Image (cartoon, rainbow, N blue to C red; front, top):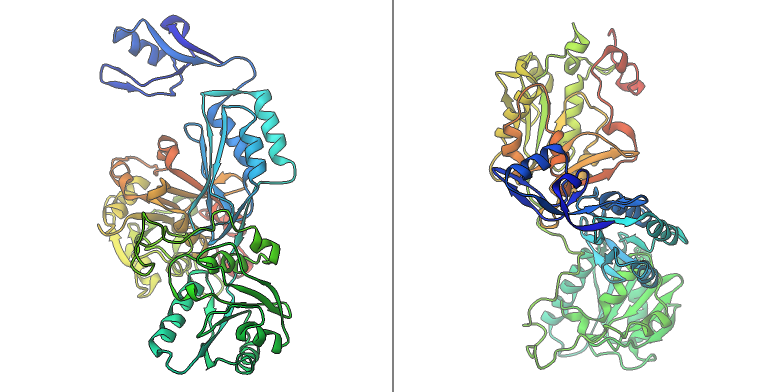
Length: 551
């Protein structure tokens, strides 16, 4: 790639390095300089321009980012489209991110033009959290260099893997001594249940017992019988030896102690054991606090289905110093909360669903495709709306136009709001604008669903909503199947004004290219997001139970 100042008459096909204003037009950085752009610059008095000129074998930044991202993607990790040389990777479910740091280091060492940044190994992530970003630094990279990076990344599979949290059933034994306050026990149970819930698990009713190994063993046996997948013991007195009351209770219940102690503070006095294949932990006293401590290091791995051994505990020392220091001398209970681990639920923005049901169905005349009933007598629009109702989108706005009364009758009192588009005959944009204009102001976004796509399920809609995240710049979300874009599409409120300016018989899909940096694609398991049914021939391809009779 050549870079530098070039006379305008030699810059055709080059990439503009810095945004330039030419009269009323802003020609942005990264623009491919064509005749119109060069003419505008010349008219503005420019005689030369700083640009990048690709040479044979160079790969443009977006294509390079796309190619480098492809082998980095792994199950449960979604990717964005390439824009400005960047692709972002995000978690689809809560879980534990594992990162092969050595492989990432080798990849970043290939050339300064190729960069991959990730969260730390064993980072806890929530749905939609950013886990990695691929960024191409210059406007292009040599194809030979990119090929080396691709080959290295493919060797042995992606260095990124997401281990989803499993909904484990957790049993807790809390021992009691004379004079021990009930309030302390109650708080211990409350804090433990909060930890378990944040990791997608459930707590069996906690068992209180006397501080003896016999009582602990009996309580553990009862929790095993109740179906506990993971056993926790916290004593009224801190465990100080692998033969203390808590560990001895595990052994008495038929278990064994694997390791005592860990290089994490608070959390040193944890005791790792098991009963059969079931992990059994004696917790340190710091587990009574909601603040980050050693037990969190262990629980996150167990909930992610990753076994924890004695050597694993021994390797937790780097990053294991969590104690208060002079710069943060407050007691842990009063100290500022530790940074969000990523597992706890976040408040979710309200997202409306706009169901397009106003069209004239000209391709299926004389039938109205939305009113065509399946073998069970259920109209297509009713099936579509039922799917949307099974999602988390609210409110649901149904846009009517052609045969509005019949459409409302077909929906039979379902909990939706109707928005009539009086000028629906002018084209798709008129109906779309009516629906978007009716989205309540408290909604952060809207997902636009087509009334002739009954194979789009509520679960698919929820997956799209889960990937929407304004803080991470994921503002337009659309589904794909084998790389082909489909429907429905989710739009952040900031694009509503542009949608309301559309005219004619077209939707808003052209805005995807205009705002590529804000788009995230979610790959679906089947082609329901690509299939609409607007001809009599297409109806014959519906699943048998959904095929109409007499059409």
